[in-house]
Image 1: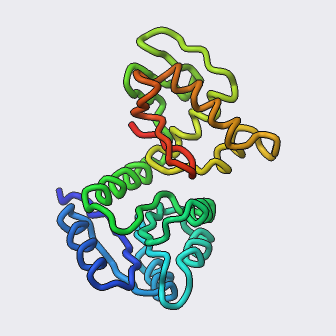
Image 2 (image 1 turned 180 degrees about the vertical axis):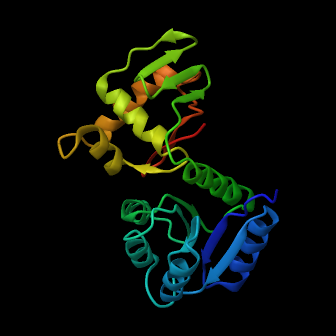
Length: 228
C-alpha cells in the first residue's frame, strides 16, 4: 500500500528559498504546491486543501498575516512561518493571528523539517491521546490524572489547565496571551510574570531537570511550547 504523501503549500516569493525548501520537503516524501503571493496562495489553498502551509510574511501583494486571517476563516491546517522579521512583537502578532510556529531566516533545513513533522503529527491526530508520556511523567487526560515515576502528582486546577493546553498544542508555540487566556480567561490581572511562575511550578513538578527543561520549553519573549 502506498504511503500517504502530505500536501504542503509553500508560499514564498524568493526563488532560491522556494527551491531549497521544496527539494527538502519532497525528499521527505511530501507533495509540494507553490505560490509566490498572498492572492495566488489563497487560490491554491482553496484548490488543494493543504495539510500544512509554509508561509513567508513579506509577500509582494499583501502581508502574510492577511493570508493567515483569510485562511483561518475556513481551515485549521497548521501554518509554519518563514520570516526575516526578528522582532518579538512581530512573532507574537503572527502567532496570535493564527499561525502555529515560525522560523526566522536564515534557517536550518534540519530544524525546518523537524517543525514540519511535529505540526503534521499534531494535525494527523483528530483527538487528543488519552495518555501522554514524557520523561518520568504520564498524563491521563481522560481522568485528569498526572503520575510522576508512577506516583500521583498533585497539580492545582490552573497548573493542570496550562499543562493540558500545552499538550493539546504539542510542538506549537503558544504565546503568553494565548496561555493567560486559556488559564484565567479575560482576567487581565494575570500577565506573563504570573504565567512564568506557574510554568516554573510545572517544571519543578514534572521535568527531570527543571533548570534545563526538555518538554516545557521557553520561546524567549514570545511564550512556551510543549515538546515530547
